[in-house]
Length: 296
Image (cartoon, rainbow, N blue to C red; front, side):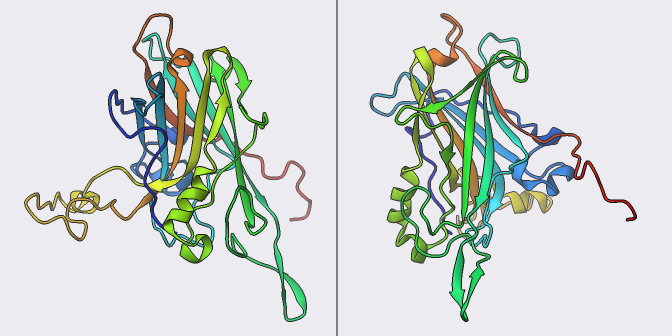
């Protein structure tokens, strides 16, 4: 697996707002003890800015990053989102510090149970892929990761909910690209970029216009000498930029949820200012077996 630059329709510029994460009622960047047990809901950073690529000036891009400190060699499972979690981006467009619009993402992992002939028997493989990968949901991909997007207006739990669909074909379930396993799987870094780009989808958002979404692994964009900071601020600001002297995240990846939305879908009347933040939530309680066997 290799590192991939963060992209959607624009790079970070213009209006940039940092949002506070509250994944599973804990903090982010492994700052709370709970998150050491639930890394898939660990939110790192949230970016929001006005898109400025040609023809996209009327859009806002929001990017929520999760699962920090991903190493490129993170197999065999790599870095999937949590099927039991609810990932959300919240927008406040009237200044009352409450969400007015929420984008909710839920994920599902489906095992295909790929089996290969080994020693005269058909043996299921424990790997995420059986051969090279190209295209969306290829037969060689052993675990298919998909997600849905709901747009909720009003309260995040009781507001008006709309399941967003693709502009082309009307699908409401979207494929996430598998992480960059390596050059033998994809052929080259350029080939992986081509593959990942197939997973950017145009979204029908109703009368306010169409948006688009990409969810997948990207290079960690944050910059910090995190190891030296926790080592009693053992910093060397004048030293060379080598060996993680100033940026320990240079070789790391994150899992990104990036959505680009027409400004008209987000603003409240003529008010041009919005605020946003991201969360990842888990249920407080979970029943593993509603009818356990007796005599245990």
